[in-house]
Amino acid sequence: MVPSLPRVLLDPFGPRVLAWLMGLAVACTALQAHSLPGLVALQCRLADGPWQDCQMQVEELGLHWFLLVGGQRIEFRHDGRGKVTMLKPSGSWQPVNSRWVENTDLCWDGVCARGDIPLD
Figure 1 (cartoon, rainbow, N blue to C red):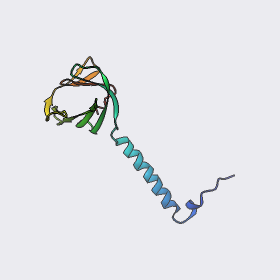
Figure 2: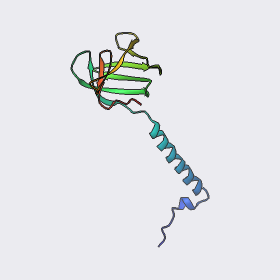
Figure 3: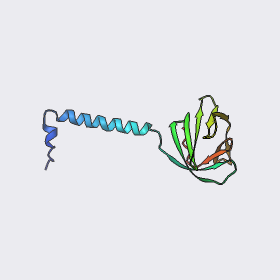
Figure 4: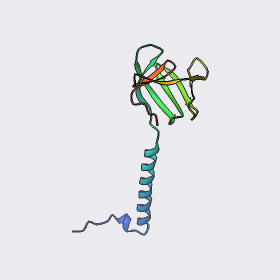
């Protein structure tokens, strides 16, 4: 027994509808492959304080992101040449040094994060 095709595919516009749906599926797959992550759950530490739950939002992968830590939004920008600046709620943009501590924690002058950090 041969399965029957849905009536819409037998209509004159059926192949066009099928092609449009296939194109839409391909486009959605491509967008998902290149989409930026949403909020990423991490652990953060301010100064030498305790580790606490925080979240990272990536605005532009490797260039612009922020951390949500204890009700604060700390924003970061990378110039693409190795310089990172940080904006805390109570201040202005300031240059910071990025460094790995104990091979698991990424720190920017007293602000540290650990976990599955989306770097690139």
